[in-house]
Length: 110
Image (cartoon, rainbow, N blue to C red; front, side, top):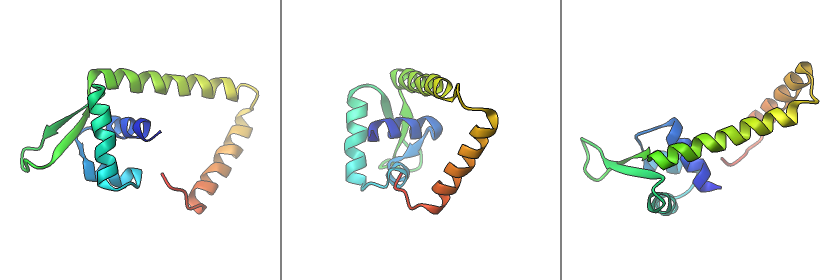
């Protein structure tokens, strides 16, 4: 689950650093480092040294990671289409409104 969240975050924020990813995941940097290492070992992401700080590394999706993220997104698009077939447009709006209210008032961990 955390690896999928990491890939999704990097796809939306190419060049992000580990600290930003840790904040997004709500996990300590040591935990985030382990996730990064696992994804890097599978050639799904790459780390590149930043120009102004040799200790910081920016995170990018590797080609295989980009393919994986796209295929996962397509799976969710297909699933959403299948699930929403019996739901009218008005019902979708009501549901979206309710879910948005829940999200803004609940204290969920990312």
